[in-house]
Length: 577
Image (cartoon, rainbow, N blue to C red; front, side, top):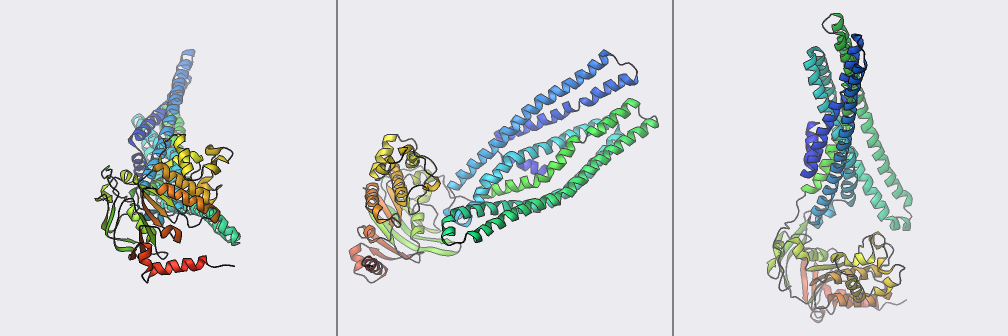
């Protein structure tokens, strides 16, 4: 328990750690004030035994009891506020720290770690830490400290009764140690099923369209049901496993209290303890273990606290890319790629590519699916770091830039656009949050989305659904382009931005892209002939290598992948029904 408590306190920032320590100190003082009821009762009993009960004795007893009550009430309130501030503050800071840390993790991390796992850490686990863990750690710590202080006081008062109390504590903690060992395996299982449940829910919701269209509602529901049942099973199992230990702990506490009472009576009958001391010890035997009993019951969750901390630290321990480079502003935007290689999970994706991309030119990247086109663009923009070779921007290795300085040079328009649950205006100004409304409207007009925005009931203040759920594909794409226009970066990466656009939106989307890419350095992954043939340079990438390079006319004179690509597209266009 002590190691888990230490780990919990060290997990949070120092400012909140100090609040936890203050709250713990106040909790111990609260226990001391709570114990004032014993001397209050002793004063009254002494008066009764001596047959000297008077208003003075009653008032003295009441004063001690009142001071204890007021002290306990004031300190408990202050301690609770400190715990609440520290608990929520720690969880908030850790969520932000995890989010900031993930900004600089290689994209491969997000491919190998499910959205459900990350979501579970930032929601369920942080929620447990800010609510359950804070209460558990503080109550357990308070119980241990308070019981220790009272045990020392009773040892000084009467070492015989104090020894019985200490032996009872030893038995209690022996059982508690066994409970902690049993709890650890069940805590991991519970955390795993919590994560699996989040993953299943997210997968079910994201795949709802496919599930319904293929008539697989019942099959996918069964998978979700299994995840729910496994979670229920894990939660139930941990309860069944720990209840026997909690029961034994409580029995030990009660029996020890009874033994303390019997021993006090025996010592009184042997004339080795006064009647007043005997009665006080009997009363104390019922009160001394109150805090320890609470601590024992809550300590069953201590291992769950430890597992929660471990899951959060797993993400924070993932090595991020070096981001503390120079805040360098390039004078040119020439990109030089020299013999780069990259592997993902032991599979080589990029294999010795070298190419130069002059600024303000358009480079189209084509090739078979899975050939490495998207990975190539991700390496150029440093979503991943290369395993070998170098990528230079203005003659400077992209890894020597700070990440923020590097990202100022890139804007992206992806095939699958993600818009946030916010107003259209805020989605457009996402890359430049302080931009005035006039700039937002200007960018929207260039991206050919001003008209459909104004047709909405609330115009630019329309709150769109998460992911842009209530907009068409073309509308989302144009808002994404407006967002890129707002950022106004010198290098634009277009990852099949026009792949899934319907003919009605194609003209407006092409115009929007032209507005975005004017006088920029363009890297475009494209399958449409119209967007490829006018490029200054075309790179044909297959199996991680550049198989062909040149403009449209040059490549059409060669037998190879590009010519087959063009002929297949022309053949498809000529089809009729």
